[in-house]
Image 1: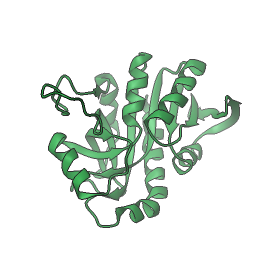
Image 2: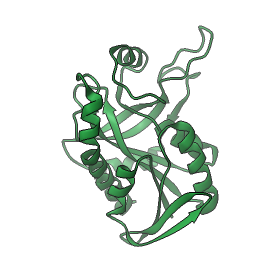
Image 3: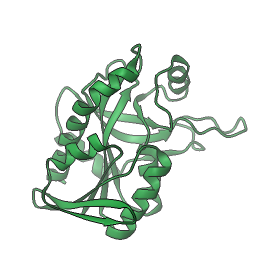
Image 4: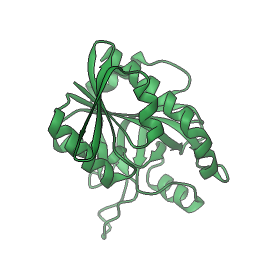
Length: 226
């Protein structure tokens, strides 16, 4: 069985459109949507926004269903000028951009062994080769409990994580929770807004629906070839 987690209603509903034979199960105030993609058993859940909400719901989800794979689908803000609104990013590694620890030996970076970085399973990332298109990017992603819109946020993130393609609020939590339970994970995010643009918080509201649909579609494709 494959688990799919989305943070927001729009992200969940976009993926739900692709599922068949759906039945809802409610437990501990969490609604699980149980159904199929092609011939594969899939369970979809909405986690809520942010690292803690995601970790709590995903832990309950994993303990109940024991999925063989968890996919995180949803939206993100671009942190690379070659990654545009509507594009999709598939993560090869994820790091928290908002974790800081006292001491010179701990510097947030994708390359620093002391940083909190999570690496996607290379066997799974080979599936990315089957997802082709000019608007699909494969690479690094950062995660944190802040909407990214200020210049100082962007500078700080890119100073420490210059190779990151986008930023969002749950992928690190998904990766860390899955690592704890020894479950492979994949992060699929579509760009809702360009963090370099002025008033991108307004763009996010406008771009969320389309980004949710794009991410859901690519997630469906991955499940079909998994």
